[in-house]
Length: 249
View (spheres, rainbow, N blue to C red):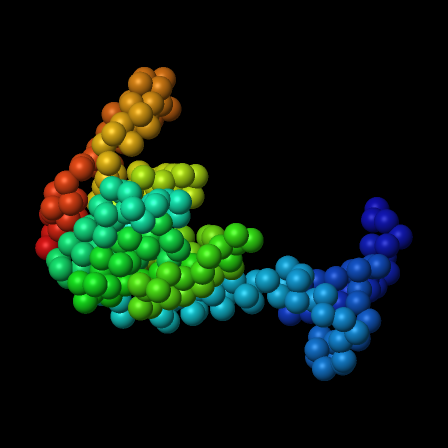
């Protein structure tokens, strides 16, 4: 025997794909709520509207970058000083990639990102900056000639991967490590077609690589084959050669 509720007509409201019943039924219609004057702007901060913002960021990003051609994403610290050897290396890498026919994609900020954009820009190449809204963000550096600003990290990171054929990773902090390990995970799990990942600066990265080998691999949390997902170098020409060789240019 069913409950008393089962024996009567259940009050049900269908709003597109959503079904509301009992005390969750809303008064009025969707059109009515859309056209009525809003008493406040709080709705622009609610999740349904955020979905539209997320969608619009994907659309804008895809539209801006769809005709980019061959590209390499270059990651590195925003704190890299302009008078440092790391900054100069970033400039040389950006220039060499542009001269090899690649667009250079960075996070669009200062430091190592600016360096790679500067090298690409000064070489007459395509210099792309994908900025992010942060409380302390400095904005898109002036060496970028295609810039897109994002609110959401995950949308921005999709653009880094979708429109690049390889990654060059300069010394950096947590943001750089986040981007590096996401790229490694996508390649390892075959979510993307394998592409070259080059860690530039052996002295900086050797401790991390040693930990991966001596802890992750040694304890069975990763395999020895995972160490082959990336290459280390201190040579700009070798970094570019690794890009072109693995991509098949």
